[in-house]
Length: 59
Image 1 (cartoon, one colour):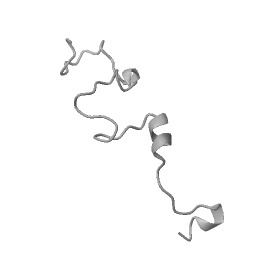
Image 2 (tube, helix red, strand yellow):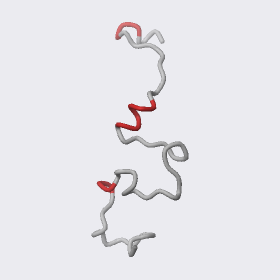
Image 3 (cartoon, one colour):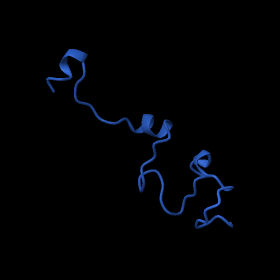
Image 4 (cartoon, helix red, strand yellow):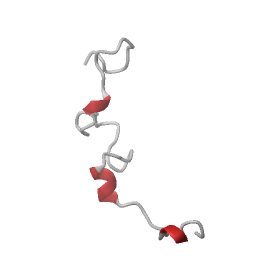
């Protein structure tokens, strides 16, 4: 607490809407195993051209 005082920093909490807008989704709160990355706007994290095999690649 003392280290943050000169920087005008204090205790706080995460803002749910800011977290979601930033794309930082929480497992079981914002998504579950029934969702896929495309539904969650996370397709930028998928590389279907990679050599490694993974579950769901063929689909």
